[in-house]
Amino acid sequence: MTTDVGTTPRKPLTPTQRLKLFEAHGGKCSLCGLQIKAGEKWIDEHLRALALGGSNDIDNRAPVHVACAEAKTHKEDLPRIAKAKRQKMASLGIKRDAGPKIKSAGFPSRKDRTPKVSLPPRNIYQDA
Image (tube, rainbow, N blue to C red):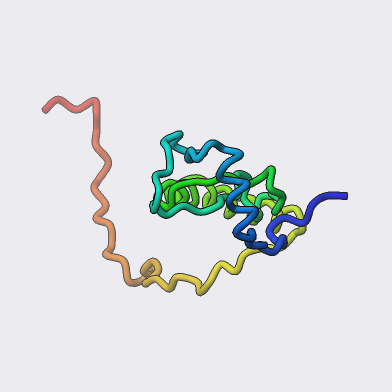
């Protein structure tokens, strides 16, 4: 049985769990490796995104700076999540709505085209 991608609900950590998470990682941002200073905003980031089959377990979470988390989300997670959703839809035979068809002027009909000028055949054996 496979994990249903993208349907795991988020579960916030309690303050005690956040403290344990922070201490377990030595107070360092898991993404950039820098120390998280006192008073600096940080979040508990899912290392493997929930939409990519990650879990809410404490093993899948780490403290990270807010800026680092946003960069990871926008540069790594969102493109991979979009690809996973496209692949899942394709495997289930679900086609994307192509949207409205583009209306163009089309090609002119044959009678509207300018007539081609026909030249007499050239005699290649005749001296100029």
